[in-house]
Image: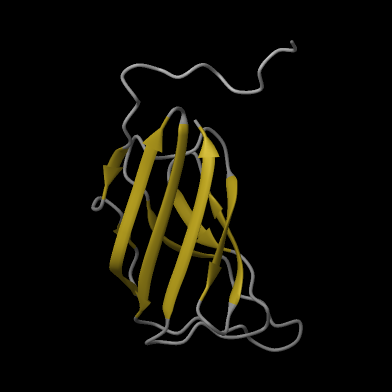
Length: 127
């Protein structure tokens, strides 16, 4: 028999640490909902932000200025900068999540992020 790819079951079964508050949005955004969770050394988050101030993609080559949207709560930040994805239903692209918890929208598929849109963003990393 070879070595197992999976660790043996733990007793008691680990439970996730979950928070639904503590995300701090920057000016131009409000929080619709937020959840971050940690379990077994893995952290993930999901966030829906209402856009208050339009972020223009400009003209060709149609990209956003780097825009900080807010900060994750302490204890739910990555050990280094990780990339997350976001979408509005029209615009989508890349965001950076830094070790300080700051989330920055960095790119778009050429669409503006308009006032009234909801930015849905998620990411995960190994702590």
